[in-house]
Image (cartoon, rainbow, N blue to C red; front, side):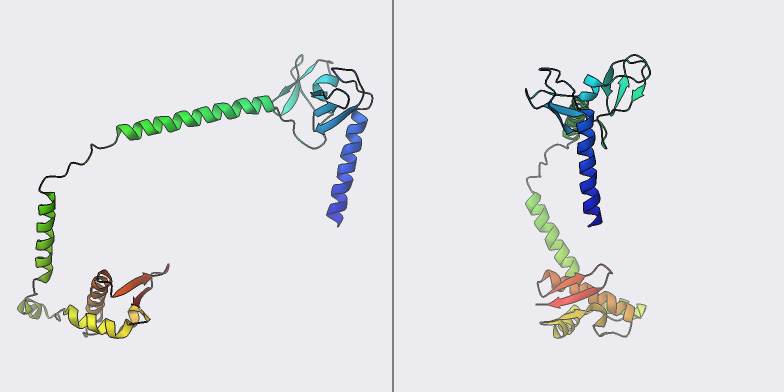
Length: 233
């Protein structure tokens, strides 16, 4: 309520201030004394509709009586080159529309030129179009075959025994995980171990889960904290 009253009082004071400042001021075109303020430092004649800056039209430098001109966000005396406060601005800074329009146009042109230059640099830096080898598909097929063969190669049990490491049987882990996650969501760390070595069991478990996700048997979910869950299908 208080803020509304203050705003209303401020508006009334502003209107009264401008009425006093424009009292008996003649229009620069028709000479009529029916001027109103459209906004700070911009008036309009109620008779002929002429709009103009009352600061430039009616105010002069208080020190040398020189004519005023607008300069970006303030008025200045064209004779003594000093800044002058406008009597026709109640609470806003004067706005030179022509100046800022020119600045905005220059800014747009600089930005467009920069974008054009960047596009030119990117176009010049592009690599040549990719030309696949005629036997690319055969090479890829051979690679997939070799990869399948590599993955399918059984681990030599004697070597694992020499390293004192348990064997990795993915089928056992697959069935173990399926029994737990089918139709529900299970915390990865909550899956019980298959081998005694918990660290190695975790590795075996994760490898199996990745392959199971590729096969569409489950979905691996990870939240922002890094916690992993296995979502059964």
